[in-house]
Image (cartoon, rainbow, N blue to C red; front, side, top):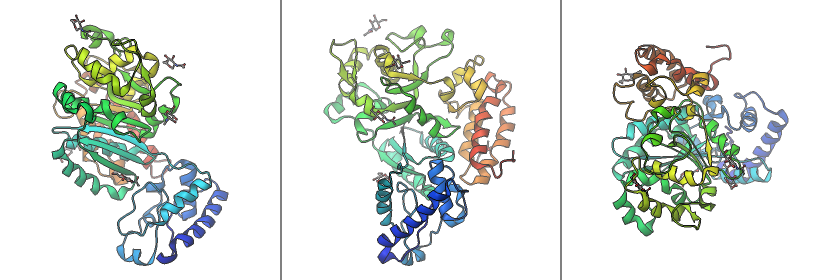
Length: 434
Ligand SMILES: *[C@@H]1O[C@H](CO)[C@@H](O)[C@H](O)[C@H]1NC(C)=O
Ligand SMILES: *[C@@H]1O[C@H](CO)[C@@H](O)[C@H](O)[C@H]1NC(C)=O
Ligand SMILES: *[C@@H]1O[C@H](CO)[C@@H](O)[C@H](O)[C@H]1NC(C)=O
Ligand SMILES: *[C@@H]1O[C@H](CO)[C@@H](O)[C@H](O)[C@H]1NC(C)=O
Ligand SMILES: *[C@@H]1O[C@H](CO)[C@@H](O)[C@H](O)[C@H]1NC(C)=O
């Protein structure tokens, strides 16, 4: 984080000059050390793609105080971050422009979307918290929620705005205006919202969509980086619905086509929406290929009597006909009770731990799968203070040890393996510490 102190009246020119000098110094210094001098902080931000800049820079990075604003102009290094209301921040714009001219890559934002309806406020906030705690690059949240939830979301998220690592937009549940009425009639509004994200968020290139019952146990940066692994025909990424066909749902019960051996689960879906909007999809309704916006309605009309899981079924039908467009990621990126309730069947998670936990079937809120619930409660209860995050592991492990009478609890170590690593990587006081 870079703080520039300059008289407010002259802040534009002055700050660019100060900035030019600091940047020159910091680029020469290379990666620098992280905290301490502002130059070092800038340098480490550049070198690390932002890693550690927020928490690493220490109290000096929060000059706050409205009295100071009258005399000084401050700018936070990352132009995407929100400025505190009491800060004169006009020079951020110039610095961002200046940065472009130096051909330094702007910090890419990671876009996360969620659809929250009914009693999902607390669960959604816990999901967002897990995203914030571990992620490195700045986040942009797109929250689609029923109108009565907007006020609470705003209040809760504004309480976190001091973190300056995320920005959010709240949207009502919406449909493309042409056949909004028809969609509402055919489908529960919240269930189909996610299908329209590429059409609603027209300006967004790529997006991670998650259900509200998701918990991130490692930085979103890591799943986000899979976007760069897409080959030229891939447009979206999901995990298989099942690892074990004997207990699979689609292969035993579905009355419609589905992707692969056991279908895919749409609870964690990474999308390159630029590609989704451009693609013409093969389909079983016409011989003509159709674009995303044109395919949904005919697809729904054809299959509405045969689908059980709503939009996930439509996605399965779509990727059945266009399998070259799907990137399939392993089960530890979307780990559900199905992966352990009848015995462990997600081998990748056994080896490396769970990366993203998906407590579907309401397991965070009942007593059926206490291992899932324990992780949820630990994250729900924790605050953003470094100490608090560091000390969440021990009590969680004790809770998990109480669940060994369940199949999921027997392998409880995989629930904290990656989580412990993420806490260590991001919050370790010193490299030696446990
Ligand atoms: C934050 O999101 C709002 C929309 O809610 C947008 O207008 C604004 O430009 C965003 N701010 C930054 C710094 O990205
Ligand atoms: C729906 O399911 C029925 C019964 O399995 C089947 O006969 C029919 O072909 C299915 N419809 C579509 C559009 O696949
Ligand atoms: C998404 O696809 C478009 C078009 O191929 C590409 O320009 C863009 O870089 C991709 N986005 C990401 C994050 O990889
Ligand atoms: C991209 O990967 C998918 C899945 O492995 C594959 O079906 C497809 O043919 C690949 N596309 C190209 C252009 O190699
Ligand atoms: C979380 O907090 C609740 C109530 O505030 C408490 O009952 C519960 O034991 C806590 N759980 C964990 C895992 O810390």
